[in-house]
Image 1 (cartoon, rainbow, N blue to C red):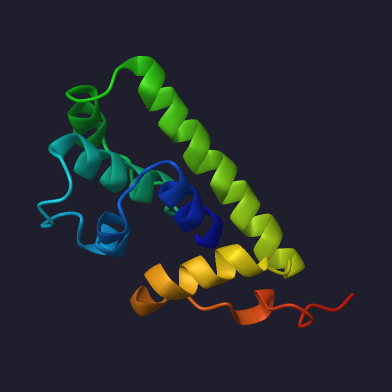
Image 2 (tube, rainbow, N blue to C red):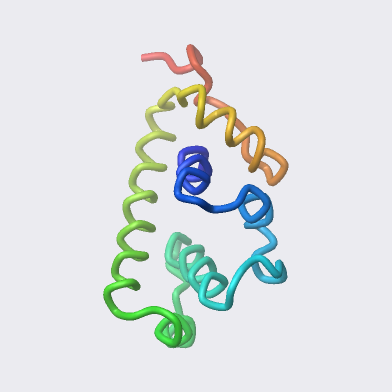
Length: 121
C-alpha cells in the first residue's frame, strides 16, 4: 500500500483523491469507471475471489479487454508482492513509509513489522 500511495502521487493522482480512496463509492472525486475498477480490484484480491459475472460485466462497460487484463495483472502482481514482503517482513523505505503515514495511516495502515531494523533473520 505504501509504495502504491507514493506511485499514485508520482503519476499525477491528486493527494485529496488518494486521501479519499476508501470513500470511492460515494466520493465525487471518482468516476464510475474508477469506482468499478476499485470494486473489481478488491474483489479480485479477496480470498476466495469475489469477482462475479455481474461485476465483470460492469467492468466491460468502462474498460476494454486489454485494460481489464492489465488491471488483473496488477492485482495479481501486488498480491504476490504483498505476500512476499509480509512473510519476509521486508523493511519499508523511508519515502514510502512517510507517504503512507500522511495519506493512508488514518485508514488503518501501519508500518508494523516493516519498520527498519525490526525484521530478523
